[in-house]
Length: 167
Image (cartoon, rainbow, N blue to C red; front, top):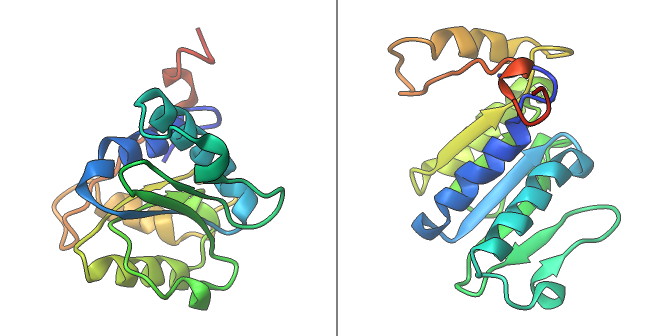
């Protein structure tokens, strides 16, 4: 969890890109597609820099509204998913999920994402802020500060830790 402009989107995309060779399908999930845009943009930038997107116009689907998708030269797929209806987080089992602004997620969305990851024993990087949150992630944040059954860890990233924005 982090403050405003703390670099949550940057680090979420970085986690995905660092792990992209460990799987085939990755999702960026938020309440609305638009909320995934910063993470998606960072993923595109990082993967281009790594040289695994050689034909951006063919490999990156970037409509003004709705889902975005990219496919790397080595077949890795990154898709944005809307959690506005948690029942639609379905169909596939991703290898990893970056949760964008999880404070806005319904509890059912968290459960659905966890279920989607179970088949492949996938990973999740959930980021957001407590501001405007629906409350469940504050409890998870506390639980994940120590030993827990989910083997999860939580971190607090204050705004001022982003020295690029706050020199």
